[in-house]
Length: 105
Image (cartoon, rainbow, N blue to C red; front, side, top):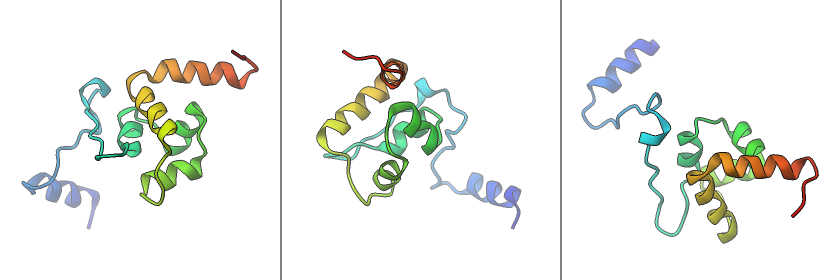
């Protein structure tokens, strides 16, 4: 089966969710599960790989994979940080970048 065959089948399936991979980030809304954070959704909204997301925001790639695959959940403080990243990613990235070059509060 070719990629074109797969794409055609997806397009013809009325139950398939819309393809939002090309949607501008401001039009993508991340839905969070009750009592948790949709880490994969936040990362996808920012159009970053796991390695890029982890590096930009100071997370371990292994922790990120565990969160996304449901093996573990981020602790409460990390969930709050992830929600801030969802709303203000450039601000958080700038603070992390400053901290990594020796900036301190």
